[in-house]
Amino acid sequence: GGPPFEPAAKDESSPYVRCTPSAKVDQWQTPTLVIHGAKDFRLVESEGIATFTALQRRGVPSEMLYLPGENHHCLNPQNSVVWHETVMRWIKPWTE
Image (tube, rainbow, N blue to C red; front, side, top):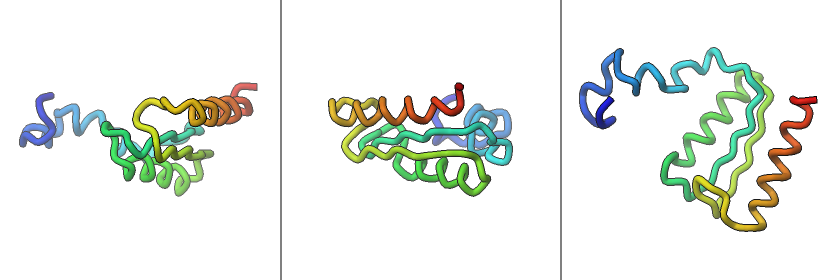
């Protein structure tokens, strides 16, 4: 693939174009729990919010858990409890 800032990254054959989830928003239908930490350097906050917004606008069952003090992994013990409780509550109706 190469770096995303190279001109080749914009080619149709580039994995940056072929594999981006945003290119398939019109196909999203799976119930989704979006969890995002404000300090996540891998994905900016707007990515998580945009994902949740797209799901909501498409009518896909979705929820967002936003953790302002966390990064890509939940490290704060109190936030970890919230994370686990939210995930367990979310998956229960979809797995019964």
